[in-house]
Length: 378
Image (tube, rainbow, N blue to C red; front, side, top):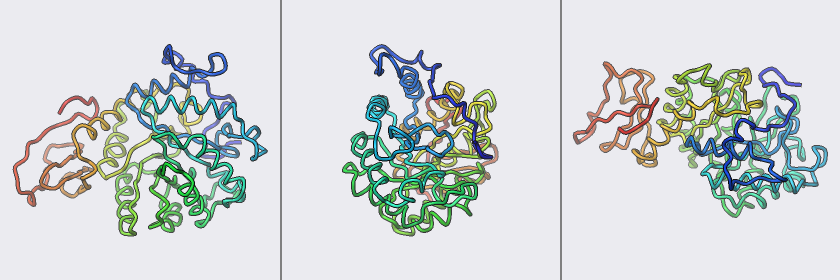
């Protein structure tokens, strides 16, 4: 049964057969050659410059209903060690290809499934197993849960503020590698604010994995969350991980050539607002949605455009020393990241008749242009 707003599953396990061609001699497999599709898919994403993959480790009762660490979805005390060994092969390969593991620990539909949401024996065992088996990987983020908190479409109940804090504290106290701990949000401010406001200033939560419905205001929300958390004394990293609407998300290239609003408002808009990264959600009503996609080449151009932004930040900006100041640009829906008196990185959708206010600067500046659609040199 899929509720309104959920993609329909095919009833089959992912095979990623279109990516078998991307598997290379010497790459890992398991059980007499299995796994070439997903290993090849990782090779493909890495070849496009992508450096993170968001995935669930527990979606019993959730949208896909096809991922768990256990021998059975009805017994939370016995783990499938063969399956977990296969996961480790995949995770090792991801790390070797420069791809971060964004580990989402639960889904909104099952956040109270283990111990009613408490840090009881089942949840502690689950977290211990994850940390012990996979915590040694360098590029890893723990995500407390997808759409965590009360939601009108989930009748099974939600974790409380105390339960969220207990989970974050447990991970921080038991992960010897001190990986970041974040939480995925609900899509609208009226739903996510009651959850996030109680977490402001909480030292065991490092950041927000943001879901937001409206592209037009994505940058504004990133700025607001960073400012609120900074004022509370514990500034969050904020990643733009799921842009809406729920039925649309990031369409395939054929349905949205050049991805103009994603490029402008979401990718560059949030990065120039200080976000810690961008991930792409495939909308539930898309034929190639988040649950059924087997061929990641359907969004090949989106990966190219995303990589152009990553290259720009890596090669040309001391972004860790910069802050957003969009008001310096005269044109609406323009974005500017600055290190005052030194460097100003601006995205201006239509640069004719646009100005940048450098009246407070004390030097002359050179002007360089960068093509967000095609990349290349300045």
